[in-house]
Length: 174
Image (cartoon, rainbow, N blue to C red; front, top):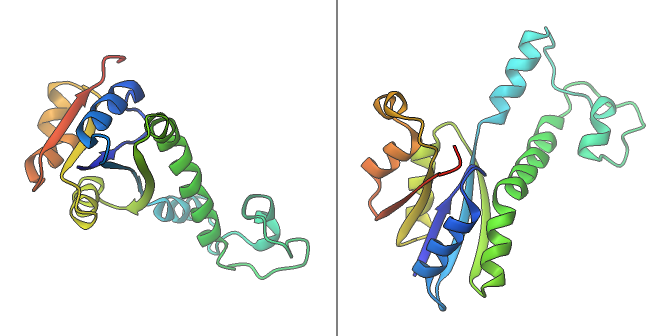
């Protein structure tokens, strides 16, 4: 069975590992997905707030994007945002999925980690579920209470819209 585990890094690794491994079985596989809400919009907002119209320059940004010619004068507005976003998404991929991926791989489960940038987390999780043809999606619930449930949490949206079964793991640490 192919299992999709969608996490923002807050899901309890042990519980997710146990359920995902059991569902996948010895010949199944698990895709661990983390969806990051549009960091490009964040960069645009920060630049706008500080009155900066162009993106970061190569020179100012070289330590983060590790551009080889960073010490040379580079044009402002260079597409450093793309490199910065790519690095950010890579960091989020490791941060949010690494513990679960390691735990599943130790059990001998074929595991893949993915990160997707999106404006709509719930829709993106469902799109990925269908695109990879997973048979079930495992998500975490932070248990924010009735108020959050009335507003429509990501978990609630996935449970309502998913074309495949959903396993909701309630967090016990909050």
